Image 1: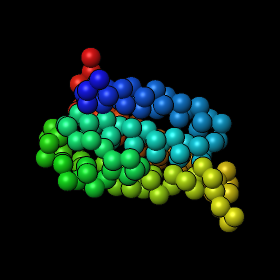
Image 2: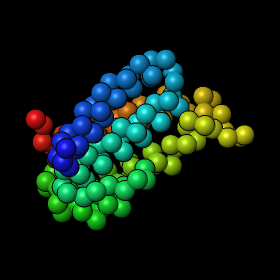
Image 3: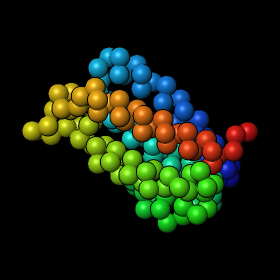
Length: 137
């Protein structure tokens, strides 16, 4: 397996997970939408990095690498590097709290439909950009 095929695998996983977000939204599982959206974004961005020959780190937010290596992406993706990085950073901040919560933060009570809808749109945007970078079989 090489970086290109692993990148394709990440894209397939991201696209598949994207489909489940509507089910979670319908069930009003807004905190789960947040968590799954973060994982989708992480997979898509790491796939993009692999496609351009960058080994992604073992941490969740790769926004700094998206900015650093923006010139290696097609122009349509390069010009959106800031937005991709912002989405990654925002959802990374929500990753643990949306799943585990905290004594003063109950995830099932704190996230709204609007939060979930935004996360779905952001994840869809990132996957769309990933499809522009990662070559399908």
